[in-house]
Amino acid sequence: MRVFAAVVAVIATTSIASADADTMVGIKAACTADWPGDYSMQEFCINNQVQSYNHLVQIHASNQNDEEKGMLIKCLGDWKTATGSDWTMVEFCYKNQHEAYERLGN
Image 1 (cartoon, rainbow, N blue to C red):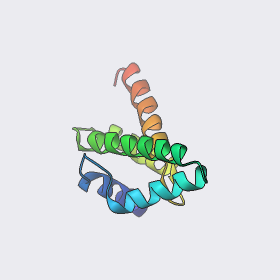
Image 2: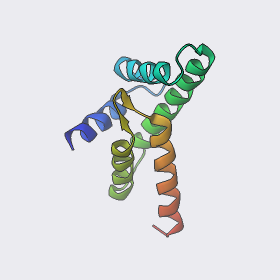
Image 3: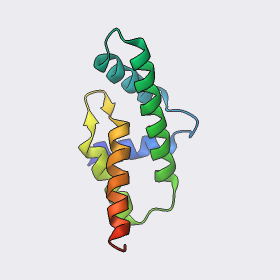
Image 4: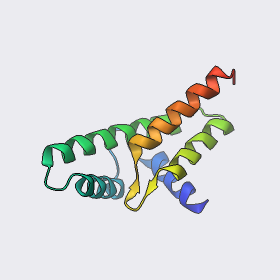
């Protein structure tokens, strides 16, 4: 649970304009590992990860109820990686959960 709190704290304190230095290190490491020697795909991967991360920062900063916060924490835990988090998958997970939550009338 401490890991989730730390990730949420990073999201909460990060500027919307870009990811913080530690997060960028993880994003770059993951994209480099996923696309060794393919610099255009590394750039594409990095841009997607940062865009998703920034969207999650906005979501976290919004007025979420406890269930929505729980969804975000669960998705963060589900998509934790050795280099940080797979931010595009965290965003995808949260979006799917939140849409289903709303369809169920919550």
